[in-house]
Length: 312
Image (cartoon, rainbow, N blue to C red; front, side):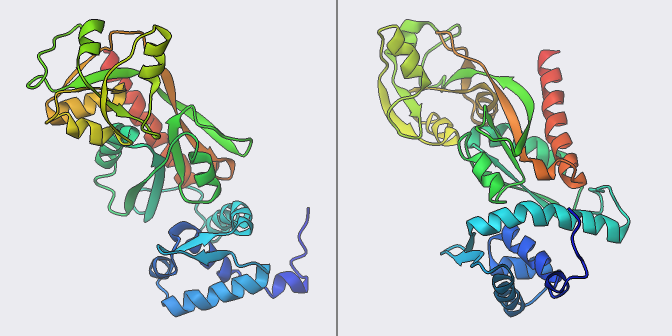
C-alpha cells in the first residue's frame, strides 16, 4: 500500500518522535532513554506527551522500575523499529553492521543454566569490541516469545520455546541431564548406580518447588527420591553443593561449567534421561537487521565451535 507522504496527517508527524519511542521501548525508562539519546529527561518526557497525542494512547505507564509498554505500543514497535532501521541505512548509506565501531547493547533472554554455558563465550568473543555490550534477562521457554513481542529482549534462547508465526528459530545444540555432587562430602564414584542415587539426599531445581523431571521418571518406575531442599536457580543449587552432601540433576551444558568452577563431580544419571534441543528465537521483523544477523551468527558459531571441540 502506497503511503501519501504529502497528506497532512503524515506531514504533521515529527519523525524524531519515533526515535524517542524506540528508545523508550528498549530502555523501559525515561531517564535511561534520555541518556541514550543525549537529551534531557524533560525533553524525553515532553516527546512522550506528543507521542501519546499522536497515537491517542498512553503508550507507556509508570512502574517502580521505569515504564511498561501498552498493547498499542507493542503493536507500533513491530512496525516502527524495522522502519527506523531501513531509514537509518538509507540516510547513512550503510546496509551492514560493523561491531568494531558500533555502539549497541544486545539483550538476551534465557535461564541461568544457559547463561552459564553461553555468556562466558560471548563475553570472550566481544572482549575487544568496546561499543558492544551484552545484557541478560531471566526467561524460560514459556516467556521468551512474549518478551520478544514486548521488545524487552533481542534474542531468546530456550529448550523448545513456545512461539507463534511472528517468530523465527535457529537450533543451537543438543543437551541432556547430568548429576552433580561434592566428592569431598559424598563418597560416590562413576558410574553412579541407582541404589546410590536414591540412598542420598537431593536438591530439586523447580519453578514450583514440588517436583521435576527426575521425579516423573522415578514415579513411572514406582520409585521416589528424598528431596531435602528446592531452588528455582541452577547456579544456586550448584553453589549449595559445595557445602551440602546431596545430589543435583541439572542440564549437562551447565553441569560441566559448575563442575569446573566449583570442583564438583559430574556423572551420568543412573536412569535414562531425555535429550533436547536448545533453540534461539527472535521476532521476524529483526531477521534482516544487520546487527541482529551478526548477533545470531555469533551465538550460533560459538556453540558450533564448542560442539566440535567436545566431539573431537
